[in-house]
Length: 147
Image (tube, rainbow, N blue to C red):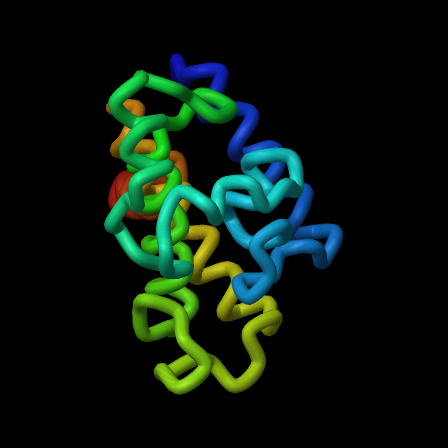
């Protein structure tokens, strides 16, 4: 399957963060976008609220200038983070009074977030969802029907 460089880099970073226990939805350097952007938090200045899909003035300037950060536009970065936080069980935008998971670094919660982000990254790049496991079961089912 043909993918993009930005997709490959993002998946590698997210996979590494998940397995090294450095994926944390409540840390701007260790969340999905923080990991995609080499564990930096400069992306948080693109919006006024963590998890918001609304670019602030600085974010709009970067977006309108066509700037990319590791291949992703400011709006795409906000969308990625929103997908991640929502799938992890956060009420958005992120606020200490809003609904959030009891244990945000639980592997099951992080996997749900990671699954949603990878699915979204596939949509962004127009590639088949690499997280879609239904083909595996279809193949097994067909083999069982033959026997």
